[in-house]
Length: 473
Image (tube, rainbow, N blue to C red; front, side):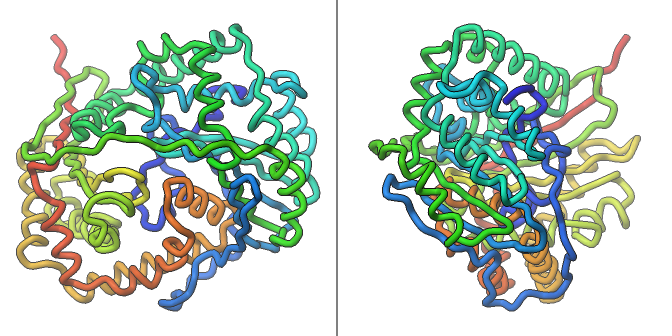
């Protein structure tokens, strides 16, 4: 990472099937411009219920590195991504932010190349690059002409095992990361509140720590800490190579074996994490700040993910999030914005792609003069309607149609398949979990949506956040 603005840490989204990667929107430490994707000839036709999404080809190298190929031959371009199954939730005590810090330092030198040379070579060959860290994974990617792929693979394989850091590199980049934290969190009341609310929601699970880390622990990170973390986690057996674009598995395999396959196998590193205890009390977090220009209300519920908790509710929760707050025709938008005229905006979100427990959220922004109590009661009234009466068949059908259409967008994007499949494999899911998504969404019933709502939308499993303007004088 040659500069702070190349960093894209945690991505928590509102779109199903991890399709959030296709649509730039703001989350802390995420630079939308860096994710400009090439969308080609977007078809808007419903997918067959039993159709796959990306139809990838896969193979595994002898050292344990998994390889995924997503063909897209519309232009002679490829996106090359290496995903490591390690994120901020895998950090040790007192080391918050080290996964993200290492992501920055990976753009320094290796035994073969001087600091910054990787990026300069890529730029000279017409490529672009970036990287991002989340709670569950770290990824590095480049987009280049297909005939430059071998160059990129050689450079990325080199820094997988040959990173060279000096004390000066660590100290210099530490200041960059601390400034990133100051500018994107400490100077942003909304980001401060989100960080505090997350820490309140998770009582024990390491998602309670910010991906960028706490400032005092970032300051304490050392060269020794970083290199130990690098040697522990950065190995082919803990990595997934995903290449999407104008290439086939038959063409990629010899290159993957030549550059990544020669790296020795290392013992697997177990991902040991504590569990989240049962929750029985709702919490409220309030931040008053004179910098706030627009107050806001939100409530976040602890929810199951694809891999943790009552996983049978996952697909129904994705549908529920769309019906309740997924767009202009959603229940919250109609009730609070269009009909009630008490809010500027209102919606909901849910992301199932977590290795640990996930979140289901409701949010609303009041119109001037509308109290938070009025806004909260209106949101709660819509939740009660879902809990008591469920959803209608027409709402369910519309939600499924919208979500199926999003899968078409994912299929046609150059980077979409690489991001969706890479993130899924990095947290421990299987390719068939992604490929069967349209069919599983199509199978969701009215009864399942209501059951999911009753299981998750419990105040005792939630944190309510209030962002208020602090009066001066």
